[in-house]
Amino acid sequence: MSGRFSPLAPASLFLDATGTPFSERYQDVYHARNGALEQARQVFLRGNGLPERWHGRASFTVCETGFGLGRNFLALWQAWRDDPQRCGRLHVLSFEAHPFSAADLAVASRELPADLRDAAGQLVRAWPVLLPGVHRLEFEGGRLTLTLIFGRIEQTAREAQAGVDAFFLDGFAAARNPEMWSPALFGQLVRLARPEATAATWCASGDVRRALRDAGFLVSRAPGLGGKWQTTRAVLRPGLGRGLEAAEPGPVLVVGAGPAGAGMARALAMRGRQVVVADPQLAGGRGASHRGHLAAALTPLVSRDDDLRARLSRAGVLRALHRWQSLPGSARPQRVGTVELLRDASQDEQRRLTLQTMGFPEEWVRWMDAGEVSRRVGLPINRPGIFFADGQLVRPEPLLDALLDHARIDCRATRILRLQREGAGWLAQGDDGQVFSMATVVLANASEAAALLSTCPDVVELPKLRAGWRLAGQVSYFRPDAAAHDPATVLSAEGYWLPQVDGVNVGGSTYLPNAAASEVTDSGHRFISEQVADMLGVDAGRVGEWLAEGAGWAGWRAVVAGRLPVFGPVPKAPGLWLACAYGSRGLTWAALAGDLLAASLEGEPLPLERTLQNAVAPR
Figure (cartoon, helix red, strand yellow):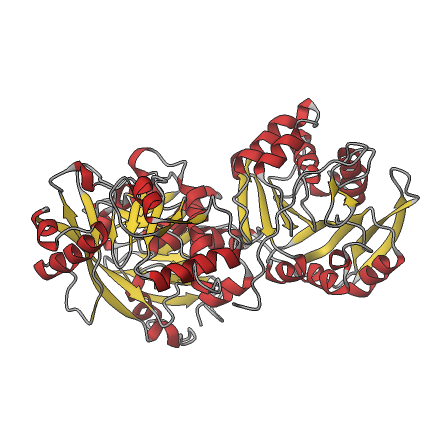
């Protein structure tokens, strides 16, 4: 087990004798007994000078140290919505070690006044599965965001990235929950703070005030609430504060129109940026890079110690599920679930122990015996497995077409040959003579990214990218002789077998290093047929008879050592970003990487932990 991993411990809704939500774990109430909303408005909003301080701002960011039942968030949302001078975008970053279930939030919302129930209902419907890490929710057409970080704050505060204008310091009493009021935490808050950031709390403890002063805040007293004589307000000392700031507005050039580039372009366009996407394959249409790729799977991973790859895959799948479910028709991934078949008793025991240790909720992943696997898949499978409810069946070609179909995205069928600095920006020259001058450029062109970087001699060498390689691979298309071989879920083991699309089951896949070409071959068909036969428990020759003549799809995968993707800013090259080396999980990383870049440019709280950002950073 990794020493950093801590299973999430959810809260349960419990009311004390006065009807106030009460934590049996901390033996303290969640809010003042005279009302959570009055406390939110008097202590936290007024204590931070809201709503006046966001007037005239393009965006404003609030950080809350304990989300609880979300009363502060709902009061803030209402104040922002009702203010005709509100900022253009409001971002909320909130930590919670013991999140409630959506069901408990729904029960608690029944006591809210009528004017908050609609917002509370939206929060309940958007509430994420209770998994450790970062969860990004969006409301009001994306103009209001809630970035939740689930886990103990002494760990998660170090992982957050944001530029915070106001802090709501809201946790259980310092004597009962000291981690919420520690000097170490306040030091992390200063790291996140923008200049002139403010803070407010109902806590009037002398130790807390001293810790705030020592961290860099100027502290003052304010009138109390609900029987308390005093509350605390603070403002960051002059000269302190360097949290994330938005980049200058302007268009962005994205090189590459595959999943990486399309994910980047879509996230930027949704935030109002004009985007030019350059890729010669666009001559065949927006989805041409995956023309003929009938279907693919988008599935998370679990590992014994919740390693970097497992955490990244979890974050990527959740982001894709949130971002792409609003797409139309066949572009929308189908949430059919994935069953990962276990090969033997040893792997079965290991997986069961992993799930028990991690404490993941069953609505995310659970073990199944062979009988339950058969019932879930709809096929007679004589093997146990684990079931991921959020496994998705994706149609790559219509997905890419839909992602790039946006009024702010300009698709150009040109290959970028050279890149060079121009003042504070970049010049990119295409093979057709087009020259693009942009402050921000994203290289999302897979294995070609390293070569394009080499055309700009003053960009720092990136050994990891230079040493990368590419793998050829194919999938095969089958038309089984009976519907009894069509699974209800994605089925995976050494290979995978997908539910039918247009009467065809897709099986995959091959991985061929050092290949001269990526093409559909008979040997590839035979290899995939054997993988499918093993999963279905039928003869490989019979599976081979199901092959649609010559049918399949082949492509390239770009890979670097460690098999993690590479996305983030290029060191010492302001405005230059990479999004490549996605390997066989291009669909998994696409939405996440796009939102990370877009959030960075817009100065939003970032939707990924610092540890994971560092793991995928170009260097």
